Image (tube, rainbow, N blue to C red):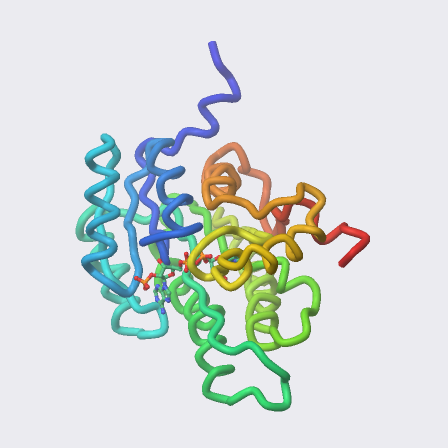
Length: 259
Ligand SMILES: NC(=O)c1ccc[n+]([C@@H]2O[C@H](COP(=O)([O-])OP(=O)(O)OC[C@H]3O[C@@H](n4cnc5c(N)ncnc54)[C@H](OP(=O)(O)O)[C@@H]3O)[C@@H](O)[C@H]2O)c1
């Protein structure tokens, strides 16, 4: 009889993943669904989330698409309400939707770009967590924030993004401190460089790509699917004693002598 393997099962669990129409969010949502969860695929565009949900269903997985612009409070309330209407509960929330609208010096950073970055990358994660909290509390639950290695070290030109991702780390750790009593675990994943639409500028040009991967001990960018296993682990009973953790998944770049 297996004793440890069942701990990874997500059978009967309901998960919301924001920014799940593509990239890291889509891969994590698929991971959760393949391990048995009913998954709510969310991003701003209804047609995009429906397309992903349909693909999941065609593969025998359970999913529904519900659009939500995470910086809009009414959209967030609707996402939580529709999830409970459809599946009756919420066990897992992955705050993955993120943006990086400004690259440049801090002193020239438009406040609107800074505000947008904080609204989407941090404030929305706090708002959605608070809205999900009464539901997560019922059976215990897991919140996972998708930060970045950029939240753990400075990179010139990335101030707004890095500030937002560093704040997300502390949001997760404070939630872990406050919500452990409710058996809600909160953990943070910090990916390194992952080949997605968001990181196109790093891999679309061969010279830029080759230069970027010099600093990575594994000598390549990650594929989105390589982020999914950690999400399954942190969502499941396999990580039942893990909360407030900040887990780096970066091909070793933070420890590279070239960083
Ligand atoms: N790629 C990397 O190298 C890397 C590294 C570290 C951390 N991350 C983090 O990983 C997360 C996912 O990034 P990714 O690389 O997978 O990006 P991506 O492939 O560009 O996907 C971004 C997702 O977020 C959705 N989205 C964007 N703005 C949104 C909003 N306001 N409300 C709701 N959904 C929104 C997009 O869909 P719609 O356009 O349909 O809304 C899409 O589903 C982000 O938080 C990012 O900061 C990425």
